[in-house]
Structures are given as structure tokens and as C-alpha cells.
Figure: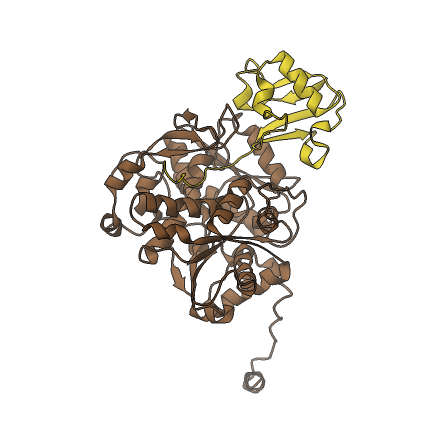
Length: 414
Length: 97
């Protein structure tokens, strides 16, 4: 792998003002978000399909399209998750070709956040930080804590107090300091935005955000790679802050730009899924608005998506609508049904966010946005074992019998 | 006078100060008075039409002013105003760049 930085620095997405690499995420002139400034001509000369195929199947297969200056300090085994041909699910959805990109088994913390965190923490090390931090709805907390532990650096994690207890435990176990904030995720996020430059910490999703969010692209690079260098007719992704849908679009546009994907790849329709209890982005798409109306008090079971004021909402709406995609805002009962459908048809247990994605697929088939004969990739980004609470009461209590053959036989014949 | 918390990107305009005091009975008036003390700062926060820029969030006592009365949100002397950059990432490369 060529050990060179292909990212020249940072650049404001809005006014294009240039910045050097550093822990900075906002343009000081216009407050626009900063993004990486890659030398795509150079990248096109460095990689092609054959060179990529010869590398191990992890997220670092696509290192030239990531913003590190050398090998990752942490997370060298992240990515390379299965893309499952979901025939039984397809049948239930009334479709022919459905694929599940399964980051419920992403290494090491069982969500796609391991991708963004390995980039952010590796960059934090390059920039000289020895303490990382984040605002999180749970999966990010787990991943930052796990990856920081592997490196032996300090981690401080700020979460909303209402978070599922298992996500807090699965953060503390790595030795990270967890601080619960009385308030919503948006309150936590604002606190982090104000604290970011105060303590000399690398906040992976605040001052390191330009680097962090680049890691999401690898999820989409892998999909195209696993499909034999094509992209599907449709992709459906869950949305919290809205970053993933924008990065799916960016990833495939980049592969097209450097000649690895044919131009038609950009014809994929990108659909965004949210839970109705907090759907500022999908509601904007459905209403045909560019403007995000923040949700003050997110409700419902999909707590990992409960971001009322989504950071990338504006760009997510643009990505979805310009691709010809749709939004879907699904109810809690639909989410639970979606989780169960995926588990019962494909043996994949996903968290509530994955239930949102499956439920959105059902909605989009019903509305005619997705039709039989078209290919669909469902983005499953987190593990069901982390959010079992919503299923309690939805599944029957198992019958209890004595260890007697006659009692088992009576049940077996039911 | 209300206390205004200044985000890092604007501290070059406030001589490095994290917090400054500014008078005004609404958030909008505070921004006008802030401009008198620190010329150039209002144009960073508001666009040409005077509206708060898309990537800026303003909070009055920890409440997003979009949930209150925006720039008309009333303020008392002891109130705290925070100017916080939105946290957003980049997007796909433009077609012909």
C-alpha cells in the first residue's frame, strides 16, 4: 500500500477556503463544514481494481481514499463485513434482488462506527492527541472506548442520561470514563462543541469530524467492491446525524471519478430512513423541503437515531433528492416488525436502527419507489444484542415444562 | 448585560476572549451591540439578509433560539448567549472538480 497522504489538507465545503491538516472542523470565515481536499488525479494513478483486489479485505483496502498519512494506529482489522444475498427477505418484501451489508458484525465493537473511529483515532494520534472523546448515542461510545483501550490512551465519553444501560456498560468495560448528561443527544452535542477546544482532547465527532466522517465511505466502497464493482439500483440507509447517506454518495462518486466505477454507478437512488419519533431529515425529504426543522424532544425506541438537530441533515437531504431517492419515517411497531423480519428470514439480529431500515424498505416497496426487478442494498449498521429492550413483550415468554418426555412431546406436536 | 460565549473560530475578533458582555433586550440587539465592540463579528454570524447563517446555532440559556423567537428572543441582564458552530461533515465531490 502506498504510504503517502493523498489528502492535501482541509477545505471549506461552502466557501472553499483552504486549511492545513488539524483538529478543526469549522471554517472560520463562514462557519461552513470543513472536508478533505484529495488529489484525485494522483489517487487515480495509484490504485485500480487489480491492485485493490490483491489487498486484504478490510476498510484499509481503500487507504488512498482515506485521510491518514501512514498506516492506521488502531483498527487495522476493521471492515470487510459480509454482503449477504438476502433471498428469503427479498421474497417477503416482494423483490428479486436484496442484499444486506452487515455491519452488525463489524470488528471490534459490532457497529459501523468502528470504521469512523479507527480513522478518527488514528488521525488523533498523527496530530499528537493522547486523550480522545465523543458525544454519542451509544455505538460510537462503545467504539471509541474499545479502540482507545487497544491503544492505551484515555477516553472520555459523553452520553444522554436516557441511553440504554447496556450501551453504557459496554463502554465502561473498556475503562473509559463515561459522563451522563441530563438532556437529549443534542444537548450533549452542544456541550461537546463548546468543550472541544478547551481540554486538548480529540473529540472524534467534533474537532476531528472531517476525518472521522471519511471512515463511513469504506462501507460503500465495500458494497461496490463486493457487488463486482457495480452499485445497486437502490440503497437504504438509517439516518441519525445524516452523515452516512452523504458518505455513500461521496464514496461512489469518488470511485467513479478515479475510474474504478463506470459513470452509471451514480444512478443509484439513495433512500434515507428514520423513526417517526425523530425524523427531521426524512420528514424534510418527504415534504420537499431543503430546510431541516429540528426535533426538540426525540421519542421512540430507536435511540441510536435520536438526533433532533442532525449535523449533516442539510447535506443528507441534498444527497437523497439529487439521487432521486426518498425518505421514510417509520413507527415503533414497524421497527420491531422489521427487526424480527430480518432475524427470521436471514438470521441477522440487528438493533432498532436496522429495524428502521427494513421497515423503510417495506414502505418504499408499498409506495412504488422500489419495484420488483430492481436491486436493493439494505444498510444494517448495528447489533441487535445491544438493544433488546424493545423486544421484551413483543416475543412470547417460553413455555416452562418439567424434564419429562411426555410434556415435551405434547409441545412438539403443537 | 448578557454574557455571550464566543466559539473558537470567532475569537480572533474578540482578542481571544471566550466570553464577552453585550447589552440588548433581544438576541438580535445583542448581536448588533457585539458588532459595535468587535467589528466584523456580526457578518460571520449572520448572512447578508441579517438571518443567522445555516451552520450557526445560537442558544439563549441553553435553549436553541429556533425553538424560541429566533433573533427576537427576549433577554435579561443575567442571561447567557452561546454561539455554537453546527457540526457537519463534507459531502460528495462536485461533478467537475
